[in-house]
Length: 297
Ligand code: ADP
Image 1 (cartoon, rainbow, N blue to C red):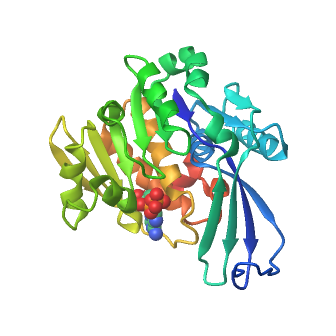
Image 2 (cartoon, helix red, strand yellow):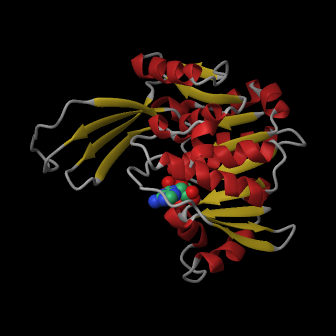
Image 3 (cartoon, protein in one colour):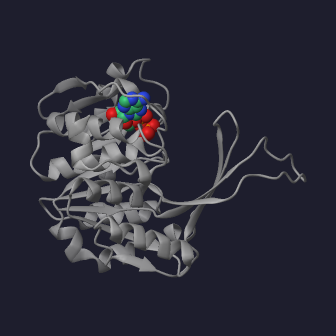
């Protein structure tokens, strides 16, 4: 039902008292290795909810790639379209200081080698998907080819992260464009007013058929050009332990529900619950809830 076209990374995390200055060495905690990357996060989040999900991605022929493949398979994701080789698996080198601040260096690795050709080779998968979800941790050409290759009835959900300028055809296909506050500001170039209520119509004016702005603990705003509606969807109150991956869990849940025929507002009302559940546990993929856990919220 859901096809995620996107990145798969190994997140390598070390806790430090403070960051090294240039030329300096500091000692840190034991290394923790977590499966991550927005694509792999989304496919895993959807599968954990019970969605029939496939991932189109590229990893290296290495231990990080095998870790990613194993965690996806264990969650029930169809990994037949995860390509292997061409470059090392993408890596995020993360240091976390005692205040919880992250410093991150990303090496896209194999994610940067997921080509438009790879997407064309998966044409039947794209045509059959009810919903395709894409992000921007893979080459923009590959994103554009995904948009071109989708089936006539395939709905496209796009989260422009990390934010980058998007071609008109890509923007026009988004239904919805899903952004957090930072991505919304980037897309609007700072010129569309101060509040999310101002951003929604301005984002719609860029061409997508619908827009969802996630607002952290405040939930999400949903704007649809067809119904000319602007709705706020509140998030359940939870004790937030770690917000890593909340946006990915939200977007995966939204995409899955849209594929099941939900209205956008309905799908968003479900997705905020999934996002809220994801912030109550540490980590990204480790924190994604099952349908039961969302129900218990
Ligand atoms: P991102 O992770 O991309 O920055 P947000 O912070 O907007 O995106 O979070 C995405 C979704 O996760 C929100 O719409 C909300 O449903 C949920 N969420 C995030 N932070 C909290 C929080 N502190 N309390 C409740 N829900 C949250």
